[in-house]
Length: 350
Image (cartoon, rainbow, N blue to C red):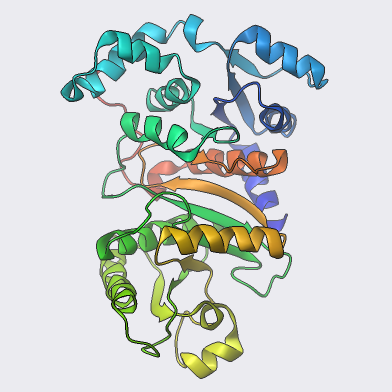
C-alpha cells in the first residue's frame, strides 16, 4: 500500500475523469464508488442506465458523484460515429458498422478518451484482452516518438528489499506475444519511462533470460543481449535516464548475493526495479506467479505507447486492484505530456 497510497495522494491534488465501460460489473461499481469517495475525480460508468442503477441498488452502492452514460442514447453518439468513420475510412468501414461499434462500451469509452470527454479508461474485468485492446488500438494513435504499444504490470510486494521499496515494474505481460529485438528494446525504454514518471527514481532495467552474462548460448539469449544494447541507444536518444543490463537471470536481477557471483560490477543486477521478459509467455506467467505465490498487489495491465492513458485489467482483479489501476491511469493523465512529449493534443476534426 506504500506505492498506491502515494499515487492516491497525488491524484487527490489533481482529480481526473476515468471511464469504466463495464458499468454493471460488481467490482467496477465498488471501485468507482471508492474512486469518488477518495476524491480522486469523476468516475464515468457506461451501460444502460436502468441496469446500472438496478445493480448498484442491489449492492447498496450510492451513485451520487458517479456519472452514467448509455452509449446508445448519448448526445455524443453522432459525433463519435463520424469520427470513427474518418479514422477507419481506409478500411472501408460503413456507417452502419461504425454505429454498431460505437454502441459497444469499450469502443465508446476509447472514443471518449480520444475526444477528451474522459482523461483515461479502465476495462477488462469481464472481457477478453482483445475486446479491450482492439478498440483502443483502432481509435487512439501511438504517442509521438513511439513505434509500438505494449503493457506493464506494477507489482507491490510486502518485502521492501525487492525492486524499489517493494515495487517492481514488469513488461510485457499482456500485449506482444513474441517481441522482436526492436520491440523488446522499445518495451524496456517505455517501462523505464513509466517507472521514472510514477516513482521519480532511477530505473534499473534487467533484460531477463535463462542465461546471465553468457552462461548459455542460444539464439533467444542473443536476442535479449541485442535488445539490451539497442535499449541503451534508444534511451540515450530519447534522454531517458535509466540503466540497462542483460542478459540476466531473474535471481541475478533481484538478489545482491547472486548478482555478485553472476554479474559483478553491474549497475542493475541485484537491484533491478524493472524486469523485462523475453516474451509474453514468460511475462504473463511471471507476473501471475508473483501475484498468487507472493500475494503481491498487482496493478495492470497499464498500456504504454498510446497517445492517451488506458489500462486493461485482469478478469481476476479485485475492486482494490481496479481502484489502484484507475488511480495510476489518472496520475498518468495529470502530466502525460511529460511521459510522452506532444501526446494528448487535439487532432484536426476533434
